[in-house]
Image (cartoon, rainbow, N blue to C red; front, side, top):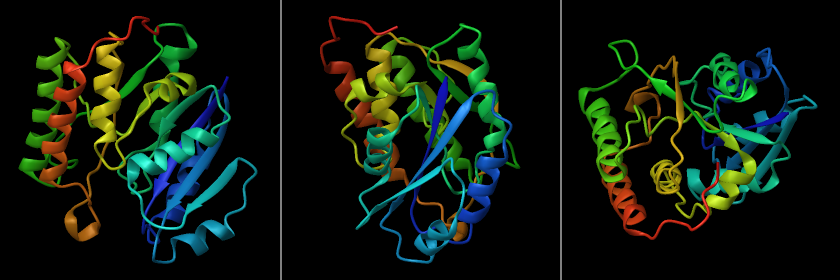
Length: 234
């Protein structure tokens, strides 16, 4: 099995070198590739990516910022792996947790695996950020009669072919809700494993806002209202 690690990047010159180093230093249980999409960065991110040297690394550049969903679509379209997982470049997630997500797949227990964050005083920069995340996740559980713990997690591991079949259209952060809504509409319940997490604050470049939460709930409602596909992917 080959795993494609997809990293969308926008104006992360202070963190991108460490993000690449951490991602490539993990002892993965399978072959990997790291596909980085520079989503129109206007700082020194591009120069840092241009100087990176690793056979497992591929860099794709958007001429202008198009949003996280668009960056992931570009990465998925060029991915050569059997499975994929998204890894943001902001150092909030620890790539050392990725082998944990692979375990249920490699031993045949799951096809789709989510990393479930446990929020605490050391891992959440605000009360409202945590409540917003829990509110969006609850909305998904109510709408689809499911019980997942963390819809907005970056760590969503699944077959590349499955992600492509979802035909995700959201160009921004709404892609997280769209992916989950479409999986749940197909009656695909993610297997969840606990992961570590450290949220950064606004002063450190946190980009998501309450508007993204409102959009996520709207997207979930839209997906729930759609007719379920006649063929279920398992």
